[in-house]
Amino acid sequence: MERPVSIYDVAHEAGVSPSTVSRTFSRPDRVNAATARHVHEVAEQLGYRARAVRTPDLSGNQVIGLLVHDVSNPYYGLVTRGVQDVAVREDYTLQLVDTLESEDRERKALRRTSGVDGLILTSPLTDDRSILGIALTRPLVLVNRLVRGVPAVIVDNVGGTRAAVDHLAELGHRTILFVAGPEESWTGGIRWRALRERAMELGIDAHLIGHYRATFEGGHAAAGEVLAHPHAGVIAHNDLMALGLMRGIRAAGRSVQEDKCIIGFDNIPACTVANPALTSVAAPLRELGATAARLLLDLLAGSAASDTRIVLPSKLVVRDSTTAHR
Image (tube, rainbow, N blue to C red; front, side, top):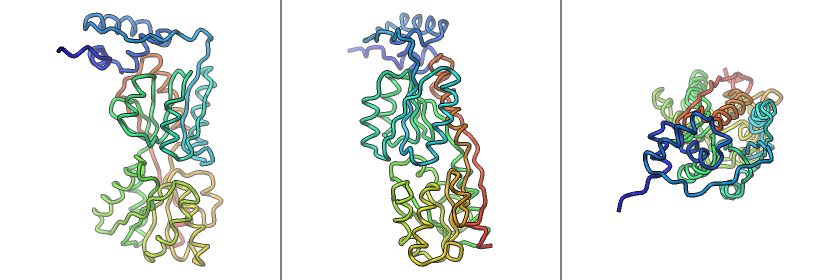
């Protein structure tokens, strides 16, 4: 029996994203008129028939959904502010959902989220197949996660990690530890692979410590395992873990500046007031959120492709948590 024409077939032939095709039939008021005409022409040529049409929202509401892991983490606060900057300027309402660092809560939230024009997922733990399924039902943009066929904005994690490894190597470390966050974290996997590859190029050892929660408490819990490697430099999954690790080291009666070089990721404001101030791989977090929001609005207008990838730069900011070891 011949396979029925799918939304993917129409999207491929029309040169647009699957979400644009879906929106053409379910939310035509959210699609550029020329794009909608083109999609309808291609669909008719291929014999595609829309299986369900949602009644357009006549209330005039414009809502962006944003899922984050932990609103208490300043990383997500800054990304959220960037999304909000664009939403307010374009007269959209922001619907924020905190999944509490839980993949299960994230899945439930995605199933329950409704009444939004599009979604932004920040560092999602959900598997690729589920994310693709969501992208078929509504416009979707990922932050710090890549899934083929879904638009995304990411930070240069590879370049930032390599810079961190080079810095520790210049300080004389022949062993580097990566204090890992959740095993499902795409970002964590990218950073660990980049760390291991750069360490191999430099002829130094790399070890994975964890996995721990990507929180202050998670970093604190890793202190004992880290202190078992007395001469190793440390790169933590994020700044909160690095700050928790420093607290755990002090709680063990050790001195961070005398015993460890520690580097975090994100360059949250707390890095500058920590004791010692934390060296961190900085990312333009507010711009990360704003870029994702602009990309989502382009997707809603039918002017962004499903394979859009935007990479923002990262930069190592050196502070006392490493310079004291020079």
